[in-house]
Image 1 (cartoon, helix red, strand yellow):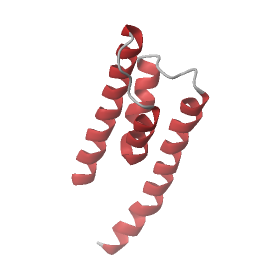
Image 2 (cartoon, rainbow, N blue to C red):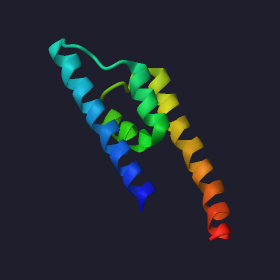
Image 3 (cartoon, one colour):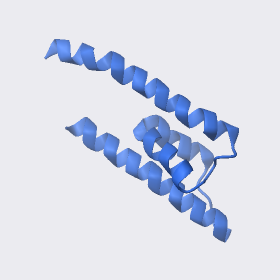
Length: 91
């Protein structure tokens, strides 16, 4: 349950950061650093960041994001796929 809450929180954060950065980009305000967006994705918010990219049409022309965010998600899914049976066997 704790892991689910952590994931939900980070994905919501990733989605909100994409929305906030897009709004700031349109208005010419202070932007969120790209490394911050990648950090949130790497810490577990990749689904939210990916959804935010396409929901808000933000960073979709940046190759680093178009390739990087799905790559982070793929690695996370592989890790979960590997770790879940390991954890289940110990319970």
